[in-house]
Length: 516
Figure 1 (cartoon, rainbow, N blue to C red):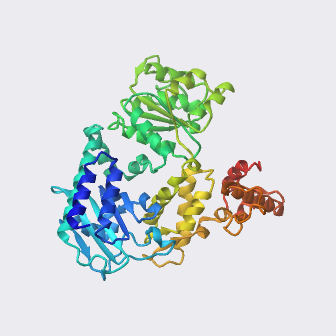
Figure 2: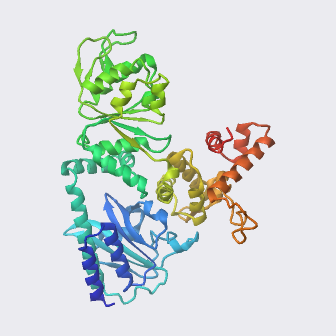
Figure 3: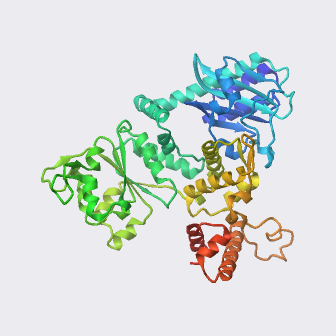
């Protein structure tokens, strides 16, 4: 196919009525007919970071990474250029995709040929198109004008997609959020929901739907799934995003102070009340109040919270004056509140008032396809925190992460990746690649049976009842834990140390395996 035919094919695809991601992917595939690359990616610019939108030839965890321009000189050069950049084969600058090719299979393979196109609309930079090859001479003789034309088409498509997304939201809210993201890195981390699984796509759709209303939302999910991130995403997408979102951990509120903390008090209301003090409802007026661990709220305070939700009225402790508070309430719990109601520990009327729009955050074991993206994201976060060179996960490490049950969910995954990167970095010179293998993850990730240990697939007579991988893994884990407990006289803490696990993680795993 000629260059002109390729451009025509790309132009037709970009105007077809298909999903934007599929149009981007067709662009990269069409480009491959002319340019023999190993890896190509379209990246969107957000602040000072390039975020992959679609790629060909990259490992799964690469799509969860964020490429800061000041950490990747090649990307910075591309973004500062006004035309396509073809780097010489002997360029000494590190390539951002070194060790991230899907075909690497755990090796840190360096890329020798690289070009990139800045994606601009007028003077505004909105992203970049990059392609890399292992062969040093792969891009020799490529017409820069052809690359510029491809870049212009990709920029136009990306710009159109961004405009459509912007029209679906309030322009003013987007500007406020963008400024907040640049000003406060914590807020940025707190609103980004990473995942491509169908469960996460449904969750995002529900967030977009309910965020525009003032409905009370009850976020349900196990410990560590990211309920606070969902609350922040709801607030950021709401009409109240320019106002504060206050956080209250109901489990940390002593019963004697819970009412004052939520609704405030007047001077002299109780011993130690030396001045008037507003509560969280007053301070959050106009914004959002996030009540975490709502299932732990004392029964004595629940009637007042019900009144605040029903009528927007609160009273400070010791005061007879009613105050109107315009607050959107988001609550979260890892408890089964219906069971709590039946047990008499939670008011039924408050439960129904909170549960106007329930959102269930799926546990990590229900969205296994998101694990590589999250692992890549946490690898980059840890790399920056420790000041390391590029961090890469071997395919075996990714497989081990996929096979694990994750009782602690995303929070546990973040901790595991942080520890693994730290272990893998030991003895590695500063700036050199850090390769994370299953051995760095911890002993619990070495319990998955190896291919040699799994039942033979060659003869059904030898294995009349074939176990699934999950069943075989559970059986192996159960046997090893029981054996370790016997060796340590039934001492769970000692067994956890021998297995290289945290005691709480061993407890959760034992419960799931039926050992407790």
